[in-house]
Image 1: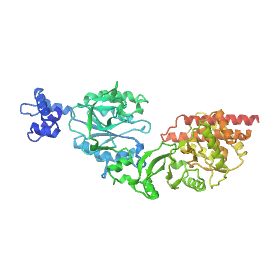
Image 2: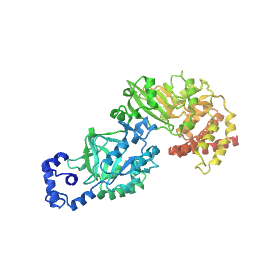
Image 3: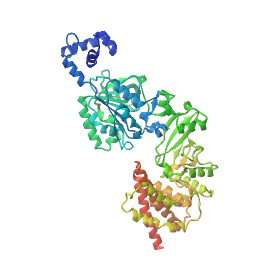
Image 4: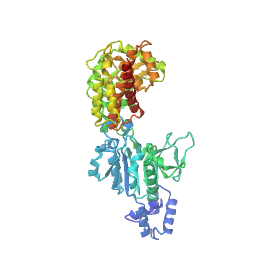
Length: 579
């Protein structure tokens, strides 16, 4: 308060009264009178209420010098917009969010601005020339929360604002002078905050089960606190577990919040975390219209107002999909993921869906574009994926798979198992990360003639017939969905694919085979399925290595696939040798 009084006195062209200052600051006249008394007694103003040299030096020390804007994140909740533009560049009233923030910083004479970028970083490059900002590149934006981003800017936190890129303020929240560090909270109560801001800015934990003040993400760090926060960030950068948190985690010390809290009314700002939040703030934003939304509007005969409750679904291995509602119905819109164009032939997928269109246990496709892969389908309500450890459900899946195979459907394309291995090897560029890859590959290729000599029939197969693609609805009706990889193949390959995706051991693999074949699988066929497990393992191992080159990691799944290639190629070759 006293610093703000001092700042008004210094920057006023004419003498201002204490009442005028009280009105400007929105506080009582008594508080201003007390502030004048303190400033006078401590030598910051003279008897004429003019700031002294000591007062001017104090203001210099209390003046914000720079800002760090965090703009590296992918913004998963912004589907479908985030396929075209990073959320910091979304426009509200024809102005990108990040440009509004920069302009508001300039209004208070802050020109030293650092922007931490990552996802679609190239889109922010123009800001260097337009506003003379500096870009800091976060190459791990898909792996860590924004703790890592702030860590990249830790040397710039002295007298600095920290600002997320996806926030819009009605009134400039920044100031030419700041007395001490603070963190911004909204007066809105939310269940995901454990903090409440007291009358004088103290921040305390809420009682268990109570809602706290919403955390906004904006902070000011003074000289006094910068070194402490810098040290905490340095320690966080050395800990992978710490990097999985948002940067605010370092403000929690022994159950207490290390900065003062500052409150803002909910009406004075908006966080743009979703498509609907952008729509509600600016219905005419140019970013509300994109290809996916246009498809929805055209197919469902609706408009922007009719598309509600958008939420991103679990990030798939191949695609990014989002759920939404229209009227009383629910839908899923698929948007092909990173690198998908090289993996999936969308014209073949289109042909497959034409071939299965009369089967009533596949998803209801309302729209499928063979060029860009956009797919709109009805949502299966109250559904769950097959639990690969629940063999009652697995038995139903195998029964449905067997039923599908006996339909003997045909298409004009095949799934070339060995050709796909070679294709993925080309995509991943360079040698495999597995030291004995060439040896394992040689054994797997050695199974080819055994497999081809024992194929009984050649029909349309799902290829990606894993437990996640078998869906049970509320009435326990079973569906088989997602036919991207489907093509002409040996039905036994589908059995192998289910097994290796579930990461079954030998006992469960044999159990799966016996379920599909109803206890009548001959030894040759069993070993042919083992061979498919080896080939499929090598295929998906290469697929994982390619995806990893794009920054996507599938954990133990990738190693498990390579182990299938390694162990089951040995098993089949041993059997063939003995035979």
